[in-house]
Amino acid sequence: MNISEFAKIAGVSKSAVSRYFNDGYLSEDKRELIEKAIKQTGYSPSISARASKNRVTKLVGVIIPKLSSESCARAVEGISEILGAEGYELLLVNTANDYSREISSLELFRSNRVDGVILLATVFTELHISVLKKMRVPTVIVGQELHGFNCVCHNDYGAAYALTSLMLDKGAKDPAFIGVTLDDLAAGKARREGFENAVRDHGINLRHGFTETAQFDMASGYDKAAHLLSGRIKPDCIFCATDTIALGAMSFCREKGIAIPEDIMISSVGDSKIGRFSVPSLTTAHFHYKTSGINAAELLLHDLKHGDGVTRTMRLDYTVIERESTLFGDIDQKQM
Image (cartoon, rainbow, N blue to C red; front, side):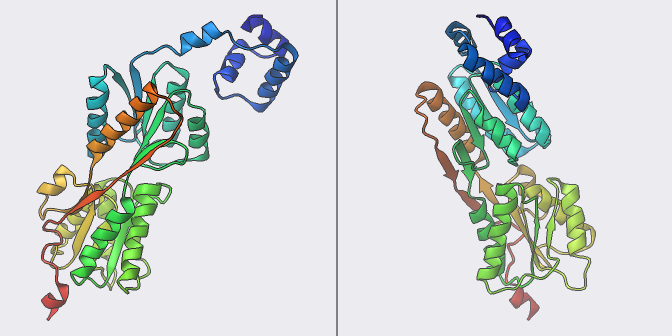
């Protein structure tokens, strides 16, 4: 029995049958019709047809959230370095932080012939997880941790805790935070928890209104800093979830004559090139983004070569790099 004959018996189209056997999206009513027909006929695709779909292509799909992101560029550099040495080419998709495009990109690579997929992840919705579970090729997630999948992630909590503590240890008494959406479990939730726990462990009560949620850009960092610094009581240090946000906050301070670090200390995560050469230079946590790409590619190659079904999570550490935006520190002494 061929696919056309089976589709006629099931009362669905050939494409619906194909999607069913390739784990594609299918409405529940069509899925039930096909499963009923399978029980009646015992139909299954031919082994030769499946074998042709499993041929090696030496292509790997890489999905990134932002083409202009320095961290993404560094990770892709690491991926390319390892996979290129093994003769693989990358198919790069930029989703521009659009979650629906991220899902459609996963569907694209799931339905087309690539040997593996590396996802530089930001947010996991139920639909993300549903599609990821249906991937027919090895898949590695970078930047987030998801149970049941190969992951390479960073110590977001530890970096946020360390940088906040650095400023509080220098005498800051009124800390503030500019973060990103808590739907992002790494850059959003873990970094906020690191900040809040450092504040708590230093015996400080965080003031109401001293936390803001920004977009991943300088303009948003500028706007959120303007809001934080517009009240009668102003923070004396700000931890920002990303360098980009911090640079926007620093721009506002310069424009309004707020001296950094004399009036306010600022720190963040990312160790971007622009942060190194900003005025003042930015205190930050260096994440090993290129290494994360290297590790992700190595995990993918391991799965392609061995396919043992064992998932692995690698958590990379960070390095605190203190620069001018926190360097002068002891606020208590300056106020004496």
